[in-house]
Length: 528
Ligand SMILES: NC(=O)c1ccc[n+]([C@@H]2O[C@H](COP(=O)([O-])OP(=O)(O)OC[C@H]3O[C@@H](n4cnc5c(N)ncnc54)[C@H](O)[C@@H]3O)[C@@H](O)[C@H]2O)c1
Ligand SMILES: O=C(O)CC[C@@H](O)C(=O)O
Figure 1 (cartoon, rainbow, N blue to C red):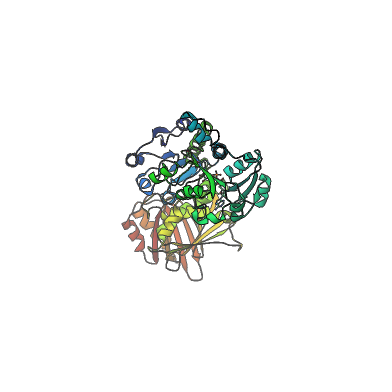
Figure 2: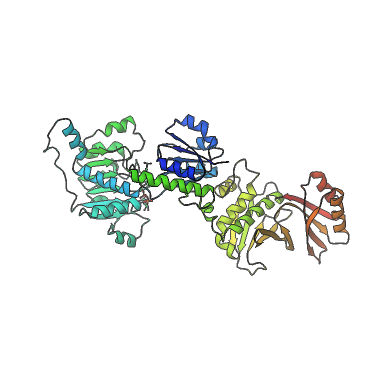
């Protein structure tokens, strides 16, 4: 059956074309009201949005089949990432498809606000010839402060340098070497506020960047500065802008983005101020950018659903690693191991200690995610996968400890899980043997080999003659065929662990039969 993709927000048509080529059934709804979206989302495996659709926790709760949300663009602030992660829904974006368009729009806004382009156009169209009123400012020789020297910020810096601007910048996550390569002088934020003639922001909206410019810090701002925001609304305090202009603290502002989109009535009023140039979130609105992001997100979604790659994934670090050939056997082993553990662990287990040795230790994080997803499957009323396994483990109070062992081991790779002292079977180790061959190799110090597949019976028994005959006889009586057998012995204490794999599923009476045999105890049945 074909996967179903829902396209929203007027994403470029090439997105649907590519998804159809990749075998998807595509519905392009453009713009639809939230209640209509909630009523149809349950049918879709993937959805693609730009910035308008709000992907909320309520919407995700109704999206029973949804596996991927693709953002045709950069910012994912319209997507509830925590809720998506909790639901095991992968969120992806296209980080660079609209970089150039947004950088160019920013440069356009810098020139527009310097030369009163928008106001002069409107005035001339209204029949006036106001040459004196629209005296502008040259950017050449002025200082441009760039906050956020990532993809767009660095492209703006490069372009405005060609206009003869001196560029200074602030970005706590960019190195001085990288800034030197861009020809940008790194400074502290207050020095930038004190020196820049133009200030352009290219960061996400975070607690650190919210309200970066407001009346509160007016005293720090170089008089006559121009402000440009083509990143996210709220980085400048919108309601303070008219007063900042009227008091000549800033000369003008150019905005492409708003704290609420479309802007609230109050902000819409503010935007009428003659010192403010504004565009309705057009940074990425070029044919080229929309084509690129639509193409990229379509290919990324198809790759993700076909498990071929996870480029652009935001909440799927582990899922992205799962395509690594070196990691894959450990993920399969861990998932099966987790499912086995969940069937022998005590009911209210609150701690799992996992020890890795060998090459698997390098990938312990994703392997633990896989083990947890196996462990939690069936006990969580939700999809559990590499995206949300840790979230589900945490929310049920399961404490995890992951360690790497340097101790020499019999096996080159070993995953050992300690279920804590209250478990009947406490410490189990597993390893991959070969292609598709995954085994438990030790239980509580007993060496044993149990294939991690099918129907498994494990029990403890006294190490004395006749035990095996009794249990295999009981199974035969119940018409249950044994597929394989493994024994682990503690000669000193005359104790043993025995494991069978059998060809059919067992029921409670089958198990009681074995449990009733003298010398047999702690019988566990695991179905993988
Ligand atoms: N107007 C539009 O249509 C449009 C289009 C694309 C992107 N955007 C927005 O532009 C912004 C930048 O996009 P990008 O593609 O350059 O992203 P990016 O991730 O490449 O760059 C963001 C930079 O901000 C820096 N940063 C983060 N917190 C900071 C802080 N507190 N102070 C200073 N720097 C900080 C990061 O280190 C990074 O270098 C994003 O918010 C994005 O959503 C808007
Ligand atoms: O889809 C758009 O046009 C908005 C793009 C932009 O805000 C982004 O974050 O990529």
